[in-house]
Image (cartoon, rainbow, N blue to C red):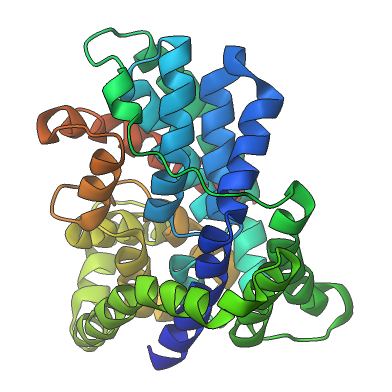
Length: 358
């Protein structure tokens, strides 16, 4: 797990730069402004998807977009549930095509290039985005939890950079990672991610804050990194046990195809840990020996499966996202089936594309 942890620490440099320079917020605002108030739910979903896809962790993506989403939701008369689901579903779609900790952990477990794992789930992510927009639009018409002026208090009004400087850091990361499949030049995420963060800080005119922004980003991933060290221990114990053969035998006894093991392991491990990162890591580390052919397809299905039940109440994502819009636990609980449906959509599409359709 330690190589994954090191790469996850470097991803914090990129995330910290995007957040503290205002780049993430600028990207979100540009998308919302472009699509307009009439397409508010679509704009909120796409904005969160892109923020997460460029390297900001999903919970922070939701927190970053929340002030903008609440403001536009209040003007458009949308419900808080619809707006939150739009952000969560968009984040789930972006998370499976991002250089985030979960993707890094899966790519390491299957020994696949990070960009290959990211690109593999583009189509499932688009389907997840579409179902998010449909469900969020449906929920947004309910009047049981309207957004009020009180929900808009305390929004951060920082000076934001231009759109091009805001997007340049993530573009550099993607370009560096894409060198391997394009021309065979391998740039490790350990280098590409911090380089993107440094570029983002420099082009937005925040060179003097480089150390402070780096420290902020690292502080956001320290918890995840420590969690993954423990997760690696759990994965090692499970890997050394008979669980792999027991699950395989169970599937055979139920006359279920072997490929079901990939999405099913992602779903169950994410439910147990209430975390996409921990769930994807445990599933990938534990079951990768049984799923090495084809490795990319297995990685994609585990990754997509880990987004189905990753937002259960015993995890931090449930509480962080609810808190971002001031939603109580009981109402937040009602969103779990809709979130699961978004994750299930991407999982089913991944299975259809990579197994059934060949």
